Amino acid sequence: MNINEKTINNYKILSLQGILNASSAPQLKTFIAGLPDEQSIVVDLENVEFLDSSGLGALVGIARKKRTSNAVVKLARMNERVKKVFEITQAYTLFDIYDDVSAAAEA
Amino acid sequence: MKTLLVIRGQEYGWLLDMLPGVHPMLVPICNKPFIEFLVDFSILAGSDAIRIISDGLLGDVERYCENGGRWGIEISYGSMQPADSLDTVIEKNRRFCLDGRVIIISGFLFIRYDKKSDYASLFASLPAGELHSCCRGSISLTGNPVEGTNFAGTTSFAQTALDSISTYYNLSMEILKNELTNYVLPGYGSEADCFIGRNVTIPKSAEIKKPVMIGNNVQILANSVIDSNSVIGNNVIIDRESVVSESIIMDNTYIGEHLEVKHKIAAGNLLIDPESGSSIVMEDPHLLTSMSQSKATGTVLRRIVHGIMATLLIILQLLPWLLLRPILGMQGKWKSKKEQYYTGLQGKTFTLSLTTIDDNGPLGTLARFLSLDRFTLFFRVPGGALALIGNQPIPVNPDIRIVPGSNAGYRPAVFSYAEAEEWPEIGIDREIVEHYYAVHCNPLKDIAMTQKAFFNRTH
Image 1 (cartoon, each protein chain N blue to C red):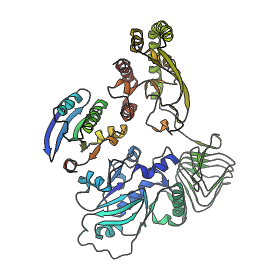
Image 2 (spheres, rainbow over the protein chains, first blue to last red; image 1 turned 120 degrees about the horizontal axis):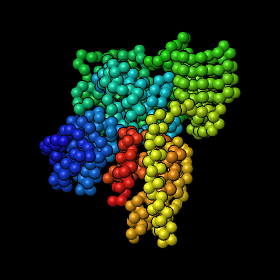
Image 3 (cartoon, chains in turn brown, green; image 1 turned 90 degrees about the vertical axis):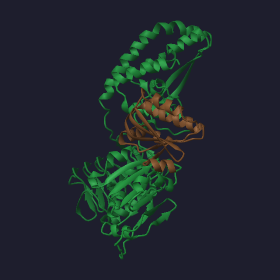
């Protein structure tokens, strides 16, 4: 999985590309562990080809960890495949989901 | 022009309790689901794209409306948090709302319109801002008026907040009696006030009085009377010599013989009084019974695989259990507790004896390592009472109304999927994992997940 990073306002925008599953979830966790605890994040999911339970677990874990540091994790540009997983698991209740990256970073 | 529909779970929660099994946005008003009225209104207003936003589940709505192709428009779906204000929702859907005019309909509102009116010109010419508002919702417009449009007509529309079963009933009756011609309704109308769907069997001895609306695949048996002001849904049987009057009979309902259903809503085996909101469950299958589809054949294969696996585990664990159980029992480290739990069938319960082992000490640790606390539960798997791996059984708690059957694929099991994953086994996290695997698992994967649960528990 590729992770591209940029900054808009005070948010780190992480654009994920590829598969977010049990084997790539640790990569995302490690990447985010390298950022300051109080750094808020927008995860751009437009190019995520596949998301499984472990990938979802990683996103939930990151969101929980950030919340304890008073930072936030927002999700943006979910594609249909990713949206389906969030719908099935009702995990959308845990995140603020935007259809635009810059809107997420400005809100 | 686009339309953003924002409908919150708390606005339709009352309907979920009242009519379980049908998504509130798909609840029929006369012979058409609620959401279709909003789609039709949006199209009449000139929209070519609609986005439906909710903090509740939208899966059923998405399966019904799909991408909007059959209406020649584009329908998309989004989620929101329950606490989000309308401004936040608009911000979260900025890309959708960015260009052009957007009609924002917020609330569980039924919009009364007339299909003959020119709403496209009306909405194109109105200034941005709130058009209608009440405590239950609002209709507003964003973006600048379309240049060159000038509406001078008298077109109007009104909103009715669906906030109780009596409002729903009265609305259906008002439409049936007076407003049928205002809406785009499906079905064949042989004469005014009389809509009859496809594949409807009506014997000569049955009597039907207008205004009436009858869905598809309906059987009305001998000497039955469908009195005026009745709405009969799809896949309904009205058995002989029964009278239906001023009532709504929902889809997939069987009305037994010699019954009089007057001023009621019948849905499956529920009979609801629209005035008081009280409902009774008809236990007798000859009175009112929902006609449910048989279970998928895939579950048989899964049950066989789980049964074989459970038998193997029983054989493997029998000797350690015979050796360790008496010793730990004498040490007071083996405790069992019987409790009522929900089965996979909606509303049905069964008793399970759950064991806890104090793993303080080498024998306790060994017993837990071998999952001996689950040993007695394996015996419930071959009979089908429990699955080997699935959902953690939900205890019956009279203080909390939980209907596990309404969750996607609830299957109480010896091991839960959450135990297999390295997620915390609490609250929403557990539910997320179980929901995921309820949809994505298969018998082969179940074997792997059982193995994973078996070992992960010891961490």
